[in-house]
Image (cartoon, rainbow, N blue to C red; front, top):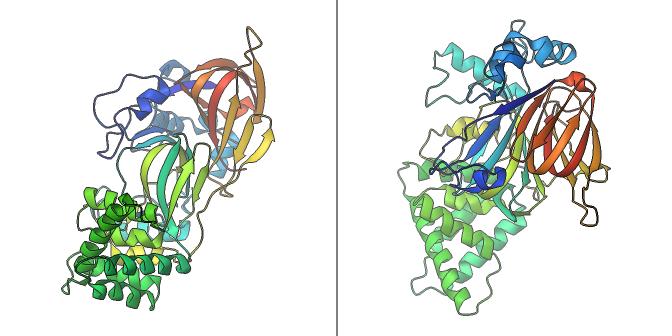
Length: 433
């Protein structure tokens, strides 16, 4: 069964005012449009366009809850009946598909493992903390790995702790910039290096604890100094100087403008600075600290709302819990390579049971008056597709329907193998094989 779905983009302040509307051919709302959610997450379940197809239900969450064997398929509904280790847990769609448009930087954040989420959720329930409370860390018992496919020409992000040799390279450049300044203050940089000698965990703890109301004022001094040096680097570069970590220092200037004085400005220098080109994919497993800075992308994640924040936000930060969740292993940028299934069909499989993403792409043949290209994909379970360019006819084992530019559809797993006939671009999210 193919069930047309839609939704209203979330109006988070960091969202772009035009990117989602321009991508999907919709009329802009006039305000920020940050994320278009396609799925059954309670925070913003997709609206069903024709309720008669779904037993009268108007949103995807309600239909799945009432008729899981039909909406999810009997096999998947059974496998998901105990997702959190509870005999009373309800069947659920395990992933959430989003179109994300960052016009401004998001907060630094990380997500827990399944074990951490289950334990944290149970403890906060026992403590009587309301699920929607501002100081709540765990709103559900699920992990939240995620991947992002860049749709804009570039997508800017911070993700994971960078190799320590690079961190020390940044510190060396800060020292050179400090010496080139009329009022050198090497002591601020010394503080950062001293804490790094004790390890990344100690450094992050110090930055967040002292930077968010600590008594010493050391981090406040360091942040002010790093911002000043980043501004000085821009001045020197304008005069022809070569700045080795120009992108990192440019990020400092952007973050300082958005979140003045925030310790996350310095924390960002410890992270990989990533510029994705269109078509590149970033995968963020549990424990990976990250922040999206700007750009448009397709995001698919486990259906969870568990976020541990680490700066660049006025929202609640639980330093102890964040430190317990973070993976401090330095690594290079976690790019995810595609598995090419066929010409124009690429699968992005991060190795989790919750989701994978398939991109179906077919260019029009200018030599043909009516170009039609056919691509096939076999479903692993209940799925969601969105057309970001062109148009297709999708045929499955039980039915078919057109999918035009800007449209999205929920697909029940009884459709089996799908054939996409047309030209353009479609993204298909489904459970991991």
